[in-house]
Length: 300
Image 1 (cartoon, rainbow, N blue to C red):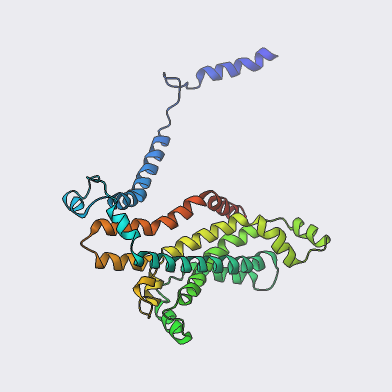
Image 2: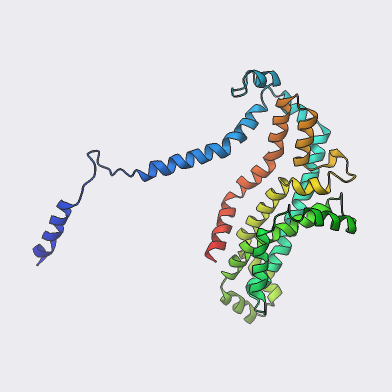
């Protein structure tokens, strides 16, 4: 009986195509995927590396050979930027805006997502769709009415005039990420907590928040990076106000610096490199948590 079973299998094995003479199969799809990935990475990282390396070059070197390497390497541009009070004033303003926006997005977003994800009430799905529709509402459309509203409220030219709208425009993405994440937390945990005498608010603080930490980190980092790199909203609110240029956020500071020191290309590149380092570092530091949070939201 065993011979009758194994013989056809052996014949089939002899008729199947074997590996190439080198002892491995050639998968032409893998090299293509790697090639596409390398091209995309080069397009994304290339300009950043050029700006960063350009900060170590003199303006004369840049004018003589824009695509070359530093010859000689110099730290003069970095020292000039780091020794500027304007740069540190811009950094302080960006930190106020970024941390204020991040705190508001995380606090308001998780409370709103908790209600949508864990409570049952009429209009819940409509409310969720309303936040989803907010993803299709760009800031440029609301520029004029938002400016008029901030002037009416007395917030034009202030940090709050940037932080509050930034929170509002970041909430749709926050809700879209957190609601599926919070829905994926088993109801049995909430039922067990209720049996132990824990209220819904206690469940929220003691159980749900620790379990949803990857999602909170994800939306927090996205809000921080978006606020740190935000240009249009500070341009509409702060640049036309009474705040001095030393207290403008870094995106506006880079524009002002590059305009004032347009002849000193090396210093402009060094200023730009220092301006993007905090956002880049925060994103790289929380990369695994961001991927985990997005994965949890997709699974939810």
